[in-house]
Length: 129
Image (cartoon, rainbow, N blue to C red; front, side, top):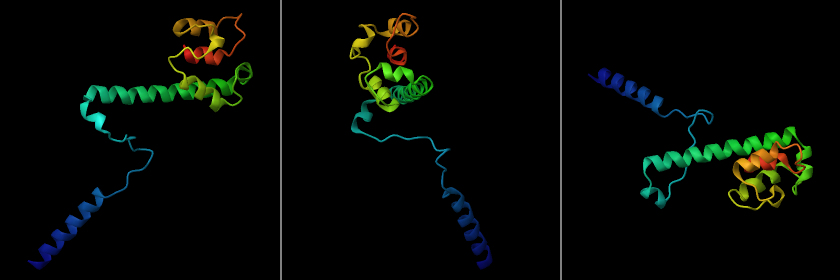
């Protein structure tokens, strides 16, 4: 009877060690902190917020890559570094904080980026659009 209990105890410990394994950073799903405002959100709101963060992150990466591939566009704007230029775009998102776009927003701003006569920062115009 004592051998049976010992085997059962060892088997239980072996199974519990599988539950205690560490999750690798690469495979972990990125969580977010909890706040009181989250109590009023539905599941759809939370999923939408997570998706929005992912899209904004992807757009920031795209802006950085476009400036990296087109460094001459940085010289046309006010900023001197890629990071600062991308930060400027997203700091004023949705506003009219870009006088070099001639008041254009949305699709008009994107068209401006591809207009041959436009001499301003094309990456800025595309990303704002």
